[in-house]
Length: 135
Image (tube, rainbow, N blue to C red; front, top):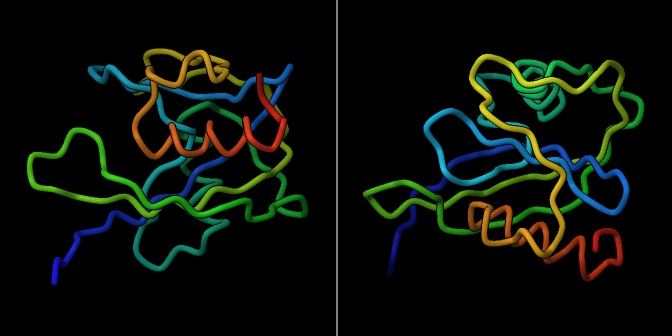
């Protein structure tokens, strides 16, 4: 029986004008949803709000925090086969979206851009498209 190594990842889904917000870190060729790995002892809310603030400079609003979906997919960029278990959340935000020092590019993507995304993000774009939320 295959034993898979999983990365525990949290991601924020932010939509505007029928597109989803994604970010690309420096030196990486694919886009990801804002978010990342939780630190030891962090709740979903604590980890995601910290990661989003670090990456794109906005504050998520806790009262609007709702789980959207969980995606399990091959992780991008690993030599040893690794999988991502990505918990995705909706949340409203305060502030202006702006890239941090580690983010090279922010983009609002549609299904036409699916090949620009990491595999787990591709599954999220497919879900959002099937739900009629993105073009």
